[in-house]
Image (cartoon, rainbow, N blue to C red; front, side):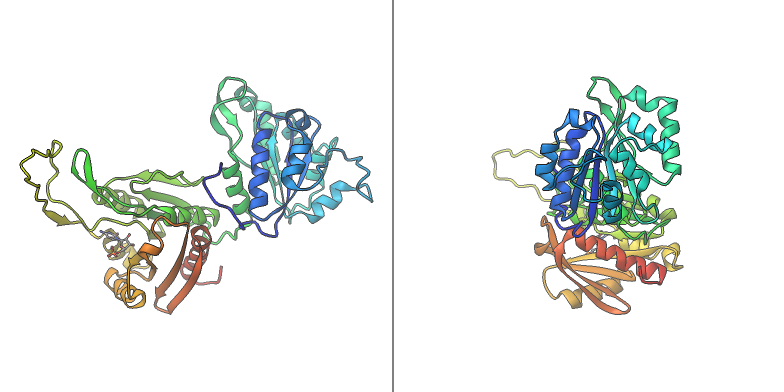
Amino acid sequence: MSSVDFTGELTGRRVVLGLSGGAACFKAAELCRLLIKAGATVQVVMTEAACRFITPVTMQALSGRPVLVSQWDDREPNDMAHINLTREADAIIVTPASADFIAQLAQGRAGELLALLCLARPMARVPLLIAPSMNREMWAHPATQRNLHQVARDGANVLGVGDGEQACGEVGEGRMLEPEELMGELIACFTPQSLIGQRVVITAGPTFEAIDPVRGLTNLSSGKMGFAIASAACEAGADVTLIAGTVARATPRGVERVDVVSALDMQTAVVSAVADADIFISAAAVADWRPADLAEQKLKKDGSGHVPHLTFVENPDILSGVAHSPRAQAGDLFCVGFAAETENLRANAQAKRARKGVPLLVANIGPATFGRDDNALLLVDDEGETELPRASKRALARQLITEIARRVSGVDA
Ligand code: C5P
């Protein structure tokens, strides 16, 4: 089961999903399901070897279309499936790509329909994504590495592999990426590279301020918005560091993650990460105060009715500190703040933008966003206000990245 909801994210996209032989064919079935859910039209093409691992019937049921295997399939009126499919496709993804299939691609062979259509694709318009899957020795073999290098040089987008337990029982590199990761790669290949070459630092989630070794103060931030922004920035080509508070969320692929607990930890991580960053997006719900003293042992209830009296000190305002740093003031670091309000969104957002000293402030209603998958945003900057109406956090994150890219580059993304 995917933990990310991709619903509608590939609406109208036409994807050729190719399967060559490998135990990872079962993951292609899940990928097909996710593609359909995301709104894509999926045409499955399988090699003879793939049909030994999973049946075309399964893939037909999931894609809602007959699966093509042979280049001699007479269901195609002009008998040119390789031309018809590639002229209609927006992208081709081969999952799994076996060592043998990659060798065929490297040599430009066309003995089976899948290899043939990869060769026949209009290279300038139709991206080809290759998700290798094989035993670790096969992966490490110089012939495979040579072939992968050649295939990448010939214009394919060769995706990485995972490291871990393999179907053969060995452990190492060569596992195919997970369906969710493959979805991310496909979505990224349709996303304008508006942040290419930009280093982006994002904070997300709540902080946890310890009272004693087992208790602490935190808040209801789920980190969903910040993680979605990290994912969208990565899809747009940025080099992303995500500084995450205390949330158990999967790290978006391609994102470098730094886990922190308290506001002070977050401040240390942020100051170090923004030193060479271009954009800082502060989406974390940082605790305003922390207990003045951390009890070394668990505070005990002694039955006398005595309750502990906690005193607090204010946490540093991380965003304000970064926004007032020399690099931000010189315009080398673009800072974006968030504001979770419960009332007077507009007035509070404008006041907060001035107080924090940020060029762009993103306001939302706290109780209407914490923990939810959707949200609505109000962007406040020098130009005035821009409303991003209620949508999924992933969709809003993409719109926000487009807005930020436009402001940073000065041109429409
Ligand atoms: O003042 P308030 O907490 O509403 O400001 C919210 C914005 O400031 C968010 O961008 C949040 O990440 C950031 N912030 C911070 N350090 C704090 C408090 C908030 O960076 N101590």
